[in-house]
Each structure stands twice: as structure tokens, then as C-alpha cells.
Length: 384
Length: 180
Image (tube, rainbow over all chains, first blue to last red; front, side, top):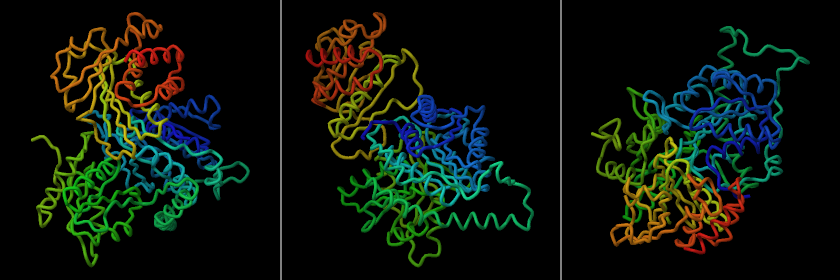
């Protein structure tokens, strides 16, 4: 069934179709509507789940963790300051191997207060051990939630589904809502190898001496390393049933490109239009959209970019004192490769400033003009 | 691709109008993208809503700066703001007004159309006399003038998307469609 829905509700429908059993959440703009719709679904019986009202995001994640440990499929959603308040619990989720799935609407961090998009909230949680997916359309949001549950529960690692504030969260698009029966076929009930139950008492997250801690982290990393292949395998399985493929990255006209943009989120879709326009002008541009950010899709990025002369990485985020975070990751992926492109880093769109086709034109002009990356950061659209 | 900007005031249902239009367009197999001004809305303050329409997937996720047409849900906005900002030459300005198009002094490169959606809304008892809800009536005129969808698709979208007095809203949209 096709429906015109906003990105927030694409998350809600994804959780509903995945038959989430426990949802604990605290509202924050622009995420609010995600949990509003889910609470309505719980109230009218559309979704047979326990909706837990909590007093903060820290408690929201804590409640999700308890439920997940008890063997329930668990979902929540947040944004910005709310995600930051969850920070401690994010480590608990990944370290404790609890496969919670969470939507995060990318919203810039305060101060100054903002409800508009950038990626610094989710990228500040880069090293908590969560799988991170960045989405570019409402359809992708819905499809990713369902696939994320499958990937997360197989490896017992939590997943974050990330979408831009307003540009997706409040934007209505046509979304194909899959049939419940087919989603059930794809995603069996959550059946964890261990669970918190009085019938078989265990302690979870107890004191772990130097004799054991490191092995737990080694195992988490080893399982993280399995994610890229599993995302592709799960994507193919999903594609067979629903005709849409997720994957780690989306490659657009990169094969013969002299310049490839590396993008994410909604800017990663606008970039495709910019690529078409540049090609009409005779410039062979391409776009590599990063969908899976953690773990970073090193192999795919290397395979695609190592044959490209110039790469322009667009970051809607910044690591203060360093540079754009996707830029760091891309350079790290290409380091030491036999043939490496020239990589340029651009920062744009912080705090919800629009990223337009003209932004990409400006990036292309700069990149094609230079024969080396003279600056670590080229700022796009900063008022002088 | 067609891009349309709606001007209204908070509380008039401007965003809902763009959503209803998006629903109607999607029913006919179009790709659509509809969004409100990114920010906070206050009752009575000028608000915007936008819609992109295409027969293929829409990848441009940036805002609309150069709409093909504008729809003015509240005529007092014509005095308050420049509703033609960025409007493409030859674009329609569809205004909810009981004045004829000549009443409005726009450059001749734009086509002006007026529809008295307020009168239609009052007649069908939508909202209150002081604050009639004109959004469904205006969509009736918009789909007709811009040849966006069949009336049936709009009617279906209103029935599905307007929880309060759907049949009166349908009548208002049909009346506006027929008058346009």
C-alpha cells in the first residue's frame, strides 16, 4: 500500500511492522511525532506493545535496555540533546549486547538552541558501539528500521536509524508500506540466546575484572566487523521480498567520474541532482552516498574511490579542532592504498542551513580548480 | 517537475492543504514531496507550505526557492509580504479573495486567479464565521486551475485525510473546483 507520510511516521510504521514489543520514549522536537503515532498505535491496539512513559531520555534508554534484556523487541526515538542525555545508556546497550533499535532525528546541538538539522548529535555517539544508518528518503527510513532489527538481533548490537530534521522528519513523501505478513516472513520474532528471567537467574553487566573485560570488547569489535556483509545479505533478502535494496552505500555514476561527492542524509540525494546538472555541462561527476556509517564501509569506499581522481567529502558536522567527520573516515579508508585520489573536505549545512544544488556546484568548482587539498576545511555558505 | 508555495497564517490549515494535495497527486501515481516551513508555527503568523510534484522520483531535498506557482490562502498576506518572491515568470498566483484578479497589482508576467474560498467555507460551515477553515476549498480551485489531478482523486484524499466534517469539506472543494 502506498501512503504519503512524513519521515517521523516512517519510523513509527517501521517499528509497527517490525512488531516492536516495548517502546519507551520521551518527546523532543523534531522527533515528537514518532512516539506520538506509536503511542496512538499502542492505545488503539494496532500495535501490541507496551508503551512506557518516562521522565527523560536517559530513563527511556534504560527502560529499553531492561525490556531488551528480558527478551522484548525494543524501539525508541530521540534527537540532539535527548540523544546526548542517553549517552551513558548507549554504552550500556552496545556493551551489554542489547539489540535496541532507535530512530534519531539529526538536530543540531545547543547552544544556541536549534531544532534544525546537522549530524553532530549522532556523530558524537560514533564510538558507543552502535550501528549507524543514515537515510535519505522516508521509504529508506521505513525499510531500514525493519532490516536493522534483523541485523541487530542477529549480532546483538543496537542500531540507530538517522534522518535529517525537517528535510525528512516533517516532509511528506510517497512511501510503500509493506504488508505485515511479508514483514513477518522476513523478520521472525526476537529470540535472544540469553534473557533476564526469574526461571534462569543470571546477573548482567556486573563487575568485570581486567581478566575478562578486554575479551568482551574484542568480541564486540569482531561482531561489528560482520555487519557490512550482513547488511548486504539482509538487503538482498529484503530486496527479494520488497524490491528495494538497502546496502552500505549508494553509488551514482561513479564508474567514469573525474570527481565524486561523498555525501550522507538528504544532501546525499540532492547531490544526485547536482551530478546530473554537472554532467549536462560536461563535467563527469558522481556521488557516493554513505548509508552505513558505523561500522564504516571501508571496502566499498576503497573499491569505488580508488579509481577516482578527485573526491569531495561533504560534512554536515564538524569535529572541532580537527575537521569534518566523514572526511576523516574517508581519508582513513584510503590511507596507504596504492592509488589514492585527491580528497577535499567541505563543511556545509550546520544548524539546518540549506544544502542546495548550488552548494554542490560551488564544491565542484573549487575541487576542479585545485590540484591539491590546501585547506583541511572548505566552508560552504558561511556568511562573511 | 512542478513546485508550488502556499502562503497562509498559522491555524488556517495551510500545511494540511498541501498534504491533501500531495495525497491526491499520489493517488494518480505522481511522486510528491510536501513540507511545511522548517521551524515553529504560531497561530495568526504568516506560514508557508511547499509541494514538489514529478512523474519520477524526486531527489532534490533542498528547499523550494523558485516556485512555479503560489497559492495565497490569506489575502491580507498580499499586503504584508512579497508573495511573488522567487516566483517563476508565467506562474499563477491563486488568491483566496472576493475581489477580482484585477484588484491585485502584480507584474503582468504573473497570472492572477481569485477564488472566494472563505465564502465557500462559511457556506459549508467549515470552521467558524470568525475563523473559517478554507484549506479544502482552496485545493479544489488549485487542482482545477493548475490541472493537477482529477476532482475524484481530490475528493478521495479529503475523505481520507480530513477527520472533521469530511463530507462538508468535500462539498466545499467541489464547489471551488466548479467555480474555478
